[in-house]
Length: 278
Image (cartoon, rainbow, N blue to C red; front, side):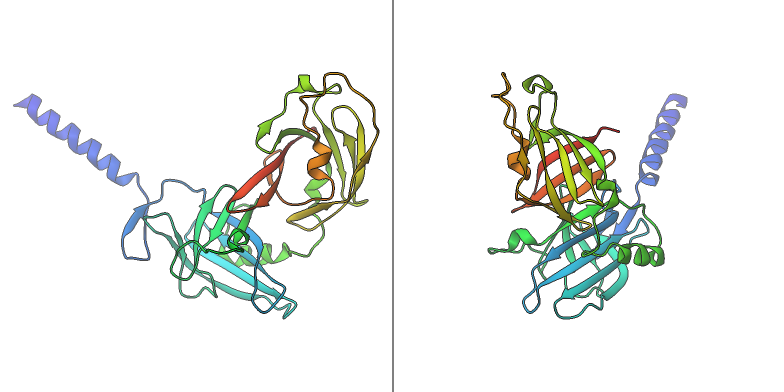
């Protein structure tokens, strides 16, 4: 009898611990879903298509207390941000749903390094511009709604380049392929980005390369790069980083000590991944 009682007690304790360890939130359909991760919270921004203006500069902040702050600027039409704040929920299908205070887009789904906007019914947008409805994540600590509003407004889409670009970067991965130091005469390609001068210098593992760039808080556009033309034995396997940068525009974000250049298609693709050399 004592053994049976002890077994029942132990079972109840395990069940009780399991029930108390899950934080839940009410979904848009009135159902509850446990929030097992905090990956969704943070700040996001992007330029999305606009039917009657140049573009919509959209910024969204999702806080740990399930509140959000959103801001939209209709470029070429009005420079006054349209703002909204309220509560968000996460549905069982993973869709992030903003409450009815939101202006325009209310539904999102997580993508690598950002959010994909969905249509008014919470479905994926189709058509030639489908890949343009992406918000990239920007690094900011989670906070309250008021501080989020002021902080996210300071990250203007047309502002100067993020000063964290100013660094010497070692290229680790290109187009999804990790680079091997032994494939390069000088080691892995090394690039120094000079924000104030809007210049980039360095080497591609063999030849010196350099050029200029322009940047905002989220995008960087490189001029055609120039460089020396030395022949380096054993470089046949090495990726020519200059080809990926020269004349191209990328969106970028920071992941701890790494700088990542991305392109948008049907999903976000990491084109160049670099690690801080400092």
